[in-house]
Length: 553
Image 1 (cartoon, rainbow, N blue to C red):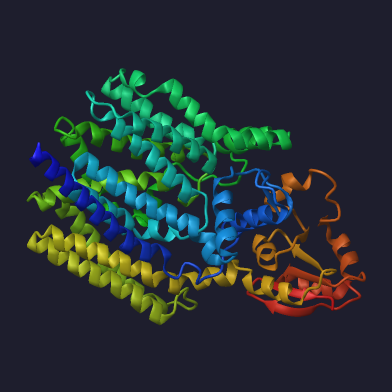
Image 2 (tube, rainbow, N blue to C red):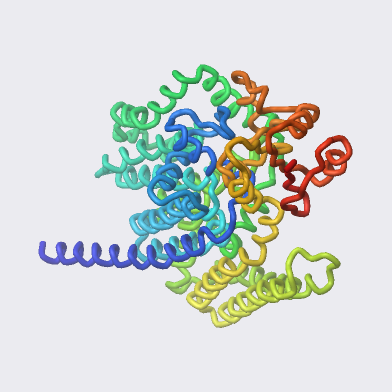
């Protein structure tokens, strides 16, 4: 008994030490310079403007964008961002904080899950692989709904297997965590928060033939907990907005999945290059990880590996089949793949380096070639997207990372290979945004014109946008009159009398020539027409490669 207590104490201490170290390391990576760059249209500013308006209106139930009803997504990210704004003020940092913490939480839970299933080293490797995945790091620092979804789905699916892995001693506390976080996943992004965990659990039970789990997993009380968490907001928003049910559940779920109504159709193989590119440097080890799962499916831990493979494959296949695709949709597969890949490296640390050898040679060789190309690219292109210095920095990281990896393969040293890949990935994450992000800022950020309007416009001034620009509303902190198309708020523009806020070009010219000060964001091509057709010449206050901010005063 004293030996067992001593083991438990040491295990608890090592777990706490690991979590502290991982929190410090990845906390710095996820949070450093989080508010350095402006929010990017349309996604980041949309998910910042809606909670800003919630706080301004004092209504946390009905989401509104540019002050019209917006029902495309559930409420979890809005509430998280509203809480961040309320506690710490409105800024780029606070707009991204909830997503960054969700990304960090996903890394920490992946450590816990990997450790519980396969041991401490696999847990640590899984956390380092996921947290050192450049694509996951970058996307976790962007204000989008897919990051809270990834965190909640990860905890839900991880809790289920932790509850069900021991047939003799089920752990009901983890089952209830499964229901709670599946409900939060529904609040994060809708019915897929229930469909995805449900599909993975269903196929796990079918393939293992462990029908007894249906009795163990507290279905009645668990579903009561699920609906107690998930349903109150849906009930309230439907009571206040009768049009919500048809738009959210029919249009935004079934039509989005089954049809091309959202204009986001991509071929079925779309996510293959996305996964390879966004999960670099670890994506080249996905196939060895799946082979390792299959070859060792009958060994201890085989059922857990089967479950992780189902987790990754089912979610990947679901979104590949969908007719609406965006790169961030497959983020929930990353934690499962990270743990499976960690298992391959764990075996290599124990002497079985062969499964790593071929993919490491291919990947590291490709890195060297890609790095040389990156350094030459700005020098040979007429109008390169990055500067020569930027190309040199990124190219050098690739070349050094590839060279270190090839040297590790030659020495059959899995530790050097792992550290080299991890360090290169982190360096790329630290350097690339400062080189690439300014391109998006110039094209898709409206911080500067929004702040100009906020500073210059009086209470009687009117802010106008040619097409929807969420960032303009967020940074100016006022409603925009829209002309030349409603964009994604078309549904809300038809509810109530919105005629004063949605105009055609004739209506805009009437407003422009009227008595009120007007600040208008227009596309460059329209400036000549506005100058020619209006009695009041436009005064240019700001311009980018595509837009002008003009005033009639």
